[in-house]
Length: 477
Ligand SMILES: *[C@@H]1O[C@H](CO)[C@@H](O)[C@H](O)[C@H]1NC(C)=O
Ligand SMILES: *[C@@H]1O[C@H](CO)[C@@H](O)[C@H](O)[C@H]1NC(C)=O
Image (cartoon, rainbow, N blue to C red; front, side, top):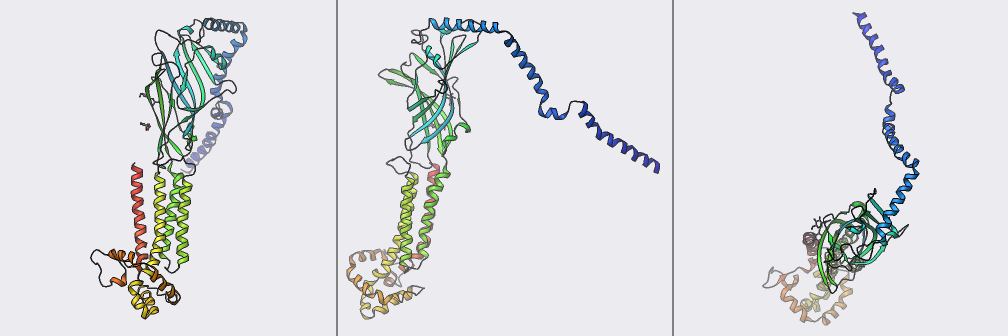
């Protein structure tokens, strides 16, 4: 039994090392896994192919010379009797131009100038029977200035403000002539095109910027733009210059425009973009709302701390003014108000009302209640003033001010007309004058000393509902 176990153990000892050696043996003699990873094997056939291709051309200069002469011959024969002033199919049928467009970069959009920049490679394809040829070449490529020897459609961009053709290192244009007379003409250009921006919904705005092109001289009866193979490539890579905007999509329309020179076929592409909200939110909405909320702090400050409350109110009003001006910087001087302007205006009104609340509170506390109390005042001036404040102010800290302000108040009573107050009393009543009657007929019962307490609730609740309404309307528009 023990010997059997020993034998098995011995056997395992022999098998295990030999197994672990196996790969080592393979790596020394067989094809290694290392080479597979670095792709030595797949490269070998490529090298072969390359050498097969390059060797005959290198060893056959005479054949190359033959090709050169043939090419020169073909080109000369087609271009010698070619009149590049006349369009193909003149007098027979309209020239059909197939358009392909690839957008290299889109943007930036200049809001101030109401224009946008687009860098495109514009491809036009048409058939020109005069350029047909026989020979071993499938196509000829004419680059740069050679293009001027061919007839080229006089396409122009109707809403372009500036167009830049690129000429480094050679003019960025190319014409390829195929055996069957097909001509492919490609040109790269950067266009600044006008784009009417409707800013009413700013900053929830989206725009559709047109790029329309047509022939400059050939009317519809002579030249037609075809849509069938219309191709357009736009992706994240070439719309990165839009910055604040997101590219949504592109649509195209074709229409006929009547001019004194004839009816032209105009094709328009609309690049639709919508604004990214984040930037404007942090620049405008957050400061505006925070400033508005800051102005409410005043309601928690004692009403006799006039300097604190006034400065807080005025500061918030001024901040809103600044924010309003700031939001209009880098903005076209449109006459209408935008969604953002409206929000800032409402925030301004909130801040202004918070400041006015203090003014009203102060006025009512120290002046408005006087006429009714004036008979009393004559007898016990100090007693009355202090009485109101003591009885209605839970803080009861106004006592020390009473004697000092007394003369001023009496002066104010004489000056402050009672006409306005009588009208006010029709609708409002301050507490001492209508104590005991909660609701008098046609009167709103306002406890003026509690104006702050009301404001603490009314202002935030109103602002909250305004925000709900605002965002509901703006986001669904
Ligand atoms: C682009 O905007 C135009 C005009 O506003 C609209 O008709 C078209 O449907 C929009 N296209 C896309 C893809 O959003
Ligand atoms: C252009 O319009 C045609 C027809 O309206 C449509 O088939 C084609 O897909 C459009 N092309 C682009 C790029 O929107």
